[in-house]
Structures are given as C-alpha cells and as structure tokens.
Length: 408
Image (cartoon, rainbow, N blue to C red; front, side, top):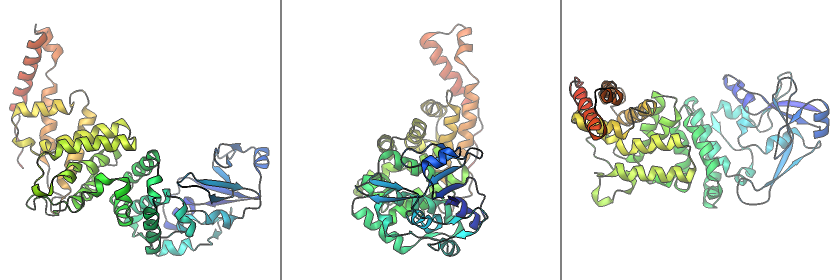
C-alpha cells in the first residue's frame, strides 16, 4: 500500500501558488484495509476515505470505462492492481495528472510539468471525449490560469469541438452546468470561461442567450466596442475588478441579454431591451436552477440598468420610484449589488475603464436621504392609510430634491 499526493496540490506547488488542500491516491489497498487502519469511508460512487488524523481525502486508485452517454455514463474499477499511472491517465488535463511521493518526488507520466512551463492546458488522452463535464472544466481552468498566460492547446480544443458536434454538451444536467459556471465566475478572469466555450461551440448549446449577443451592434457613440458580445465580456471583467461577489458578476454577465432579441431592422438601437432582458434572465436562471439571490439581482440589473445610468437626469419622483422598484429601503445590500453591476456596465467600454460613475453615488445619497423619513414617524403624527403613503412619498421626494446633483 502506497499513498501519493495528486492533482491540484502538485500543480499549484509547481506554479508557485498556495496549496489549499491535498488529495491522495492510494495504490495497492482494499476498502477493508483502509477501514482497518482507521480511515473513514465517505465516497458514494467510488472508494474515498478521510485520514483519521488529518482528515485529508484518500481515494483508492481506479480506472473508469464509458458505458453510456453523458457525464454519469461510467463504470468505476477500484482494485489493488490498479497502478498509479492508470489512475492518472483518467484525469482531464496533464497539469492535473501529476503525483508526488510522500517525500516530494515528482511522478509525471504525461509531462504535465512541461505543459505548466509552456502555459498550456492539454488533455491527457483521447478518453477526454468521454466526459462532457471536461469541456466546462477546461473553460474554468482557462478562467483561473489565463492571467498566468495559459491557453488551451489546439488539439484539446479540437476534441472539445468534436464533443459538442456529437451532442455531448447537450447531455450536461443544469446543476452541473451551474456549478461550473458559478465557480468560473469566481476566478480571476471569468471572461476566459466564455471565450473558450464560444471557441468550441459549447456556448451556443449551454448559454444560447449569451452566444447570440455576438454580431449584434450597438451605437458607436456610446459603445466604442460596438459588438454586444464583446461589451458583455468587458462588463464581466469590469465586475471582476470591482468585486469578488459572484452574484454581481453574474448580473453583469446577463445585463444585456435583451439586445440579442432586437430585430436586426432596429439595429443599432435596442429600445425596450431592458424588459426583454429581464424576462430572458429569469428563463435562464430557471433553466440552470440558479439560486434565488443570483436571479433577483440579475433580473433587477437587466430591467433597471438603463434607469440607473440616467439617474442624474431623472426627476426626484422618478428616482424614488426607481429606489422602490429596486427595493432599496428594505434590501439595501441587494441595492448595492445592483449598483455594482450597473457600474461594471458603465466601465465595460473602451476608454471608460477609469472614468467616474457618479450615478451610483447619487442613488446612494438619494436612498440614504429618503430612508430617514419613515412611515412609523408619520403614523405618530396622525397620518394613516392612503394619506400616510402619499405623505411618505411627498417627503421622500422633497428630501431627494434637496440633494446636490453630482457633476459627471
């Protein structure tokens, strides 16, 4: 029985990155032998155990055989006769298919260290095509490692295109797609996730609402980048610079979905795209089974990002209606998330990256000034029913009107 550190811990050490967790592969052992040494079984689909002292994961070496379509269509063989190289050969990328002995010696049968040096994401074997989740994983690793100069090897991209053409991407279940998407949104360069999916054709299968944005023009005087798809990824990158909050990043990604349904005869204008976009965001979240927090912030951003952009031009009463629509008084934390996504929209254009966005400050000031005036205080003055609501709105509008409008 021998144990080896495998996967991400080996890769990250070679990259000079902090090693967060260590996973181990055990060769030459049975589940009974592991249990006898105090390891606690936790695996459902294959034998995985927790170390009795460190609680790190130890998996028995295994091989996999494709028996049906989709990412669950595998049978697993875990037995003491499975070698370390056989176990590593089933992994997705060479940079994830390395191991270390307990004393730190590198075992690298698929030259992952060379691919790290070359900054290359390359598949381990032709068996890569058997698991469609690997399309998403490669795209997610691109989002993580693009800042270090990594790109997808052309031969790997060719396999991914073939998988998409063969319908494998369509076999992915919504929960797994969302899992990989949400993780990719948290990476340093999330736009690379969508660039890779678009390059292999998977974006059109998994996220058609986003894919159709490419080739849709916008007015050049407001959008020097012109293309809506290009703008969308610029906005996502702006959001990534603003905040690590993946809820905000998702709202930034989906804020302009409505422009993909504008009739070409109306291009480059997109009248009413906010309403259409809010509906599409809701449908996308329903299909992906996205958490409610993501859905709520993204729908509000899609619906009201244009109003937020025009905040300095709006009358005080219109500003109050906007704040009410955003539920800014009851949900100030969500209001802040929407403002951040709208600010990313502003910065996601060439030449706008470092310009001030006073609209956010103005809306925050309006919310703060209006929030001071409370219905309970008016009730104590004797207002009730319809009169209380009208007086509350009147005083809040007055408070917003007294604010000094910031200059652009």
